[in-house]
Image (cartoon, rainbow, N blue to C red):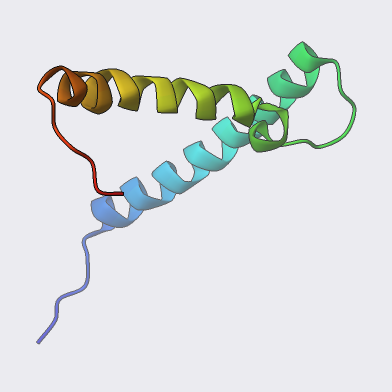
Length: 77
């Protein structure tokens, strides 16, 4: 037999949901204000993804490729 969650658990879940929705609206407001855009744009449309893709490939190269080359590891890709 399954017991129902207590009132405090329900209230906590409700407050968490309401807070996340409220914070989302605040984030959208400041995103529009700081970027000086009037549309309802998301952070994904503003981020320069090619820059971060380049940074990720550079980090992978520093962590994996360069040490492997120094150890003379042969790649079979």
